[in-house]
Image (cartoon, rainbow, N blue to C red; front, side, top):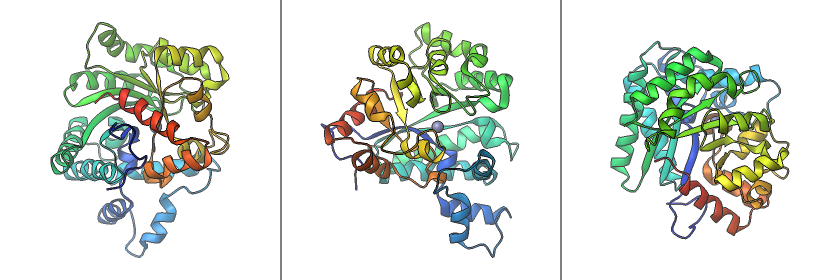
Length: 330
Ligand SMILES: [Zn+2]
């Protein structure tokens, strides 16, 4: 068994930010796609790979959206959700990960099929538990995503769904287009979760995608209005020294996803990525894959980039592992 990051004082390798639905194995996506008539029989796996994988920084958002929206189309029944939950958790194990937090949006994964949110959750949860049974030592946790693009009402319903299923979710997230849908738009939707957390309910955990495509103000809103304990990405925090100080002081872990940031053009290159600067400023930084089904990366790849292209020393890598483990919701 390989470990992506090598031992860090015996701390279990932890991945905090991986989108479950966009981590479907290429072969599984291809097989289910053919079974559903979404991929023609004459399409080779190699041609399909070229259609799904994003290898170069995206030229425009619409060309990339087509890749992402393909994934939920293959999830047509309970068995598909369970299979994907199992396989993604198994992939994490095979990358050396021992604590895997996997997230998905109930709205997004059931949009093509019209299945109920309960069917999706039951399937993903069963799959993850099956992986845990096969690989003792693996711990998984599901994070429920409210999708910005589905609007405030759907976000409020998602938070309600999350709070009804606290025994199967370890946290709640807000994701999607943060430029057109800033955090403040979702203050009301997140209020029940924020109230429960601030009221002392230890089961409630909140992480918010912000500071990726938009600037520090969206991160402040995530922290102050939506009760974020962790931030998805947060790489633009460097633009605001007060925010950096706040993250350090409050020990807010950033879920950094280097390859994702480059391919979506939120960071110009590995060398110019802000993760190392933030870490040296004392902000807890974790390294993650985000959407390995489209970005074609493993956690091993991301740690390799951290070491060889982003200026991380072995001590820095070890520190990231400790930060990730300490910030886990599982
Ligand atoms: Zn993400």
